[in-house]
Length: 270
Image 1 (cartoon, rainbow, N blue to C red):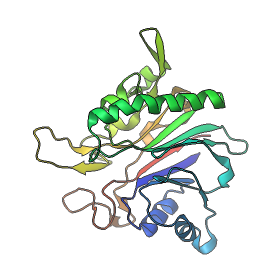
Image 2 (image 1 turned 180 degrees about the horizontal axis):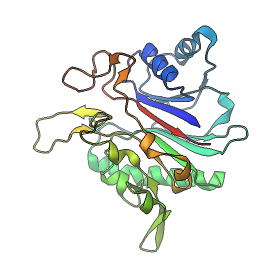
Image 3 (image 1 turned 90 degrees about the vertical axis):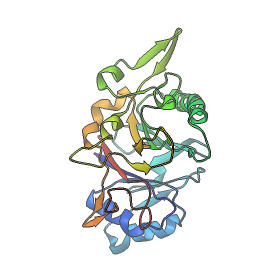
Image 4 (image 1 turned 135 degrees about the vertical axis):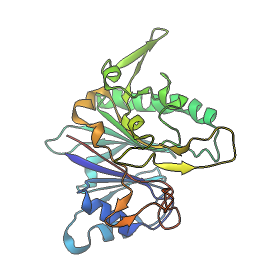
């Protein structure tokens, strides 16, 4: 089992928090967005005491930083731009997958429609790399700045991500004689008041007639080929690190001391 941590750190120096989460949950791969500090400094913190053996897996996408508890040579960059890093994760004697890490543009600068119109190009890039590696064992994770129900995520020519494993098991959807591969997106289950987690990953309140308040911008999804090795019920949005809460007393993310986004934990059997 390979365990992952994703976190948009909001340009905060969260060394202690990242290390504590990593050790508490035995994390193998750390994927960070908006990590403005030195990767070497985080590596030093992660490996302090000699208990860990993390390496930085460099890439061209400055918005994404990836660290792994194995050689960075096992995370080969396949395609990158300013918002996406696609890596081939190939561990010895393990199942090879395509890891897509993304931090798409913020809604502070892009409208919902603009983001949705960018997703078909994003989807095409993923499919091109799947053709090149010869499989669709693809895992997508990151801050999409869209909710699971928004057009860019659910549209067939976008990410085509559905909430149902049964639907995703059909592998693709055909529209006007063209096939579009599905993603299975378990993040729908992370909305609202649940006993085992917060109502979302990001809280945003504004003076508009339509306001969701809680959003699930931080998401993980898989192609049908990986569903048997991925348990969506094990996806977690932690609100505590040890006894330290990541939330204000009103239950919203503590963006003063930590990040305005909550972290995401998940695992895949490779």
